[in-house]
Amino acid sequence: MIDVRAAGNWKEGGMMKKREAREVMRQRRGEMSGRERRDRDRGIREHLLALEEVRAAEAVFSFVSCGTEADTLSLISLFLGEGRLVAVPRVSGKDMEFYQIADLKELKPGFQGILEPPGKDPVRGIGGVMLLPGLAFDHQRNRVGYGGGYYDRYLAKEAGAGLVTMAIAYDFQVVEKLDVEGYDWRPDILVTDRRVIR
Image (cartoon, rainbow, N blue to C red):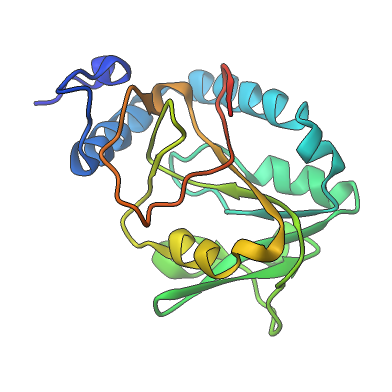
């Protein structure tokens, strides 16, 4: 059994394998109390909203949080209230596109029960900030996702769009070093409830 509480200090040749990272972080996120989750989500919001890149962004591309993920619903609501363009993802087969929304009420359960937007025309070629999900990260901002590769493929395709990519996570999801592949997308900035890693 992996010691979940020790995950942040993982030492096994200085490297944590993807499978182990996913197992550990799913378990640790599930162990949080409601109060801990609220406190940590508040810390993430404070760090994220203080970033100049976020303050200056006219468009925000954000994942829609589900289950035990760091909360994005309050962030999406805030950005919509500020009149920014907000786009969220919808999965189709092995691909993912982002569609503009005007209200969280537009979202309906879709791929794996995650709330997804309607919309016919995806938002493409627009710069701004993109918020990425993930299960584990390291001090070099390497990211382990859920294994579907949707963000890796999307960002490889949209690399020239001028998006500043930011992953958000609880601080315990950051380990010393992850065993990642060359195609695993590394965000420009990693924001946790305790720090910002560039």
